[in-house]
Length: 123
Image 1: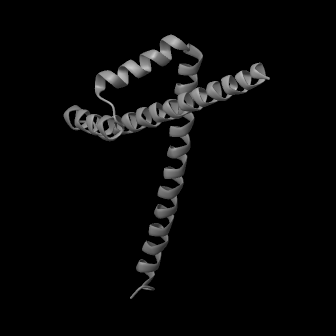
Image 2: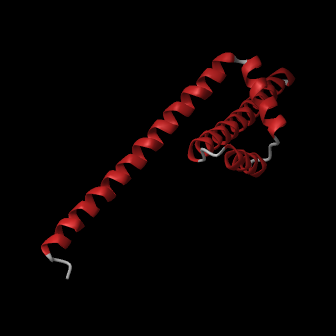
């Protein structure tokens, strides 16, 4: 009976540890994605660097601590790091498609409005 309780406790403990790792992994993923977007949005490196530091601070990191967390993932499990990059690529691609759809929709509305304006339908 004690063995069964021990096994159940051990499995519960390991499951909680895995869940904590997944939460930390998602946090790193989200932070890294924000950093990539900030670097892309701000071509001026001084502005981008400031934005990156704000993102890191908001998420509870310093630059060295964030790099250390990434290095742990890379050194501990290269497969997980590749998964991180693939997940980021997919997420950024989906975000880009969504933004492009929104832009195209606004562009079409503006074009339609310009046609109506030229026909005098909004006056």
